[in-house]
Image (cartoon, rainbow, N blue to C red):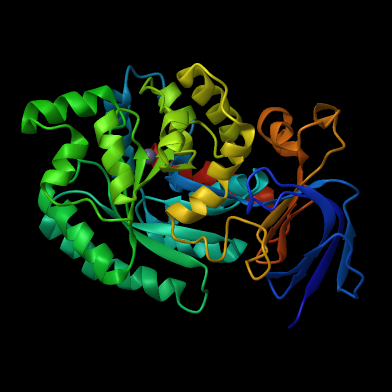
Amino acid sequence: MSMSTLIKNALIIPMSRDGEYFYGDLLIENGKIAKIAERIETAADEIFDVDGDIVLPAFINAHTHLAMILMRNYKDDKENLQQWLAEIFPIEDKLTGEDVLRASRLGIAELIKGGCTTFSDMYFFAEETEKAVKEAGINASLGLTIFGDGEETERRYVERLPRMKEGAKDYGRICFTIAPHAIYTTDSDSYKRSKELAEKENFVVHTHLSETKKEVDDCLESTGMTPFVYLESIDALSNGNMILAHGVHLTDKELEKVREYGLSVINNPSSNMKLSSGALDVKKLLDMGINVALGTDGASSNNNLNMLEEMHVAALSASLKAETPINAYQIIKMATINGAKALHLDDRLGSIEVGKDADIIIISTKSENMNPLNNPFSAIVYSASSEDIRTVFSHGVKVLDERRLTYAEEKSIIDDVNSAWSDIIRR
Ligand SMILES: [Zn+2]
């Protein structure tokens, strides 16, 4: 069935040329952006006059653990990441596929309400998260999550990946990563094997690296090397094909290599500040030419999945760290096109260009906090609230319409998660 939507009178921010925006119209046909012009006069199934509202590519959450939404606001007053994980891991041992499915539905609803239609996940029961992605009709890069040794990696590869691939078949908007969790949960054989598998399957490798000072100190103590040097020494760095979540404690010399290898760093500023992990010097990395994308991390270390809020926090954190303000446009890039590049999805997502998927959001310019508008990039990063994100299209289909989810009933999604959680803590 052919389907077209004509969006009229928009303030379009295409994210394809630095600092560019213009007033115009945008035509969506069969899920793709068909035409962008100052004025488009054509028949369409729906004509949508947005009266000066902002049209922007939908956000890309490049690092999260969606189903950790179950542990939102749970025992999050621990002293550090390690103590907090000690509370979380026993709960995770009890989770079932059904728990993960319910949590994923809630996570996706929250992502969409924050303007996000693509996320990169690292968690268990990925085939359940996959179901929730398809129900909502959005995009995902799902990790084959690896803990343990080389044998365990092989087992997960042989047992889980075929199931994940089967579920994604015929959908076309789910891709995969090989996701060794971290150097303190995954051994060297496992990292080496992850790199081989990623090359064989043409996937990206997704891992946590240099998140906390303790991680660095422990690694120095056990191997005599920093986490980055350790991964390099075991030949686990995948050229142009790896995303490093956090990277807060990477040294200048390591950052040079990150650029040489063409790796992307995923900034998760709320999680880093909340867990007292430190702050990534985003401005320095961008000035060096490193691709920096943005993630919320899991809802249990944030404690939400709101990409618009994450952008605000990212800007404040980056400016504080660099002791000079970061440009708001750079932050929007991190949340859109840089995320698409990191996940190797920039051929179809991350910017508003003819031929790309119509994953776009409409941000109202009518609320108190959006007036006077002045600089629209500053408005998005510093003064917008997710309430201003009125409409979200994924592949040309409205998944959020005037703040209401179109594909599911919000209350039942929330009720299902609450009943799963009360069951989990009694198990
Ligand atoms: Zn994480």
